[in-house]
Length: 341
Image: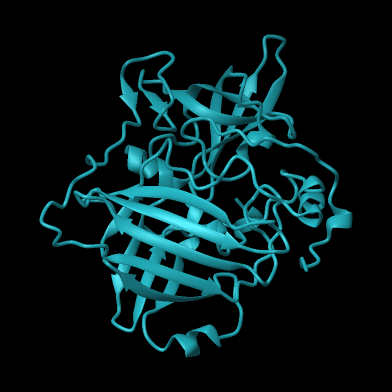
């Protein structure tokens, strides 16, 4: 049976489609902002909160009629923009700016920030796919190196892997729901019921959607999978599988691993996390997850396949796929999520 997750208290929202504009963060951006519209504002930056999970700036803007409004400008996380060469000293309080972004659907005077024109003529882009609007003097280019091959095979899987953008997402467009699971999802509010609000940790399999670098570390009897988001560490037991499976349930579950012709195969049970993903799909304690991590022929990419079996949620096993690329200089950085941000 599905666990009780307070469905009666959730407002009814049926048939929601989640959109993602290029460069947007992974939190509930689409429901909160009208991504089909771009507006511009001018004014003075009065406050900057340069922290995960999202950066926030406050803008004092005056209309033609002389009315002053304080705008909350929200944009991608520090983990994202730092890889485009952006730093917290770039936009200081007191700076006069022109900004562009998508207006809020829920909160008045809120904006999903994409572009900032500084008073010195530089234009800041807060996402890798955003285009300049006012200047060719751009700040915000991707500073990472290119995806690199490992033709000798010397590196293997134990290195840092990075998300490689469009076309490498984890989720499917549709799922074979049981009637009970379909009812739970129909009652889900994508704004108020996001399971990751206020830095709440992600469980399995949701954590594997994270868009930041991850690293495999060989600890002998265990493999550590270090995921940048929420500073998560998954522990994969390579020996004594029975003891590992007997551990108490947790949001990441109990994972055991084996090698199959160079492919790392991971089995996870004991997952005590009520959500399959962030769109309101529930998950039961009976969920069983099989993962396969496989290098491509030239060692430049890590191909991933996850098979999720949960009879309370799906009428048949669900297969998800994703891939990561190898950039030699990438690293897993501290995430340091700020709950009040």
